[in-house]
Length: 119
Image (cartoon, rainbow, N blue to C red; front, side, top):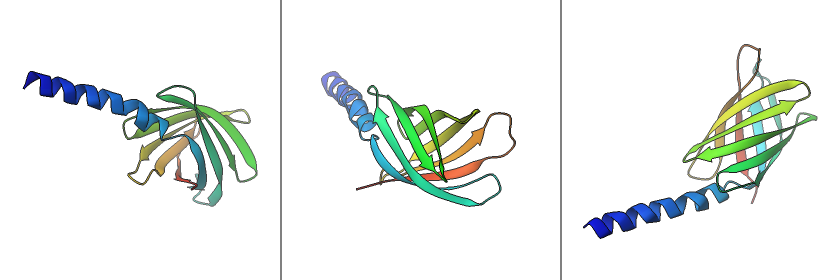
């Protein structure tokens, strides 16, 4: 029984890097600004380790760059756009899409964003 539990635990640990790696790629972006207006674009996630990554957005005529990290079904990114610093927190869905809320430091409110993997 102990061998079975240990084997299952090791299999679970081995699955974490594979899940983290599956997050890399190009995504279609659909979001809403603080005022509810819609925007779209593209995001690219590049893996930098088993759990961390770099993210680049091209949305609404502007671009931003950040660092990101995955933990199970949570995915977060800190970013800089012009002189603003922001944070976005996503939930990873079973289909690989990322559903999130974002904000900018010092501003009240939040926007929404969905990243859908390009196939």
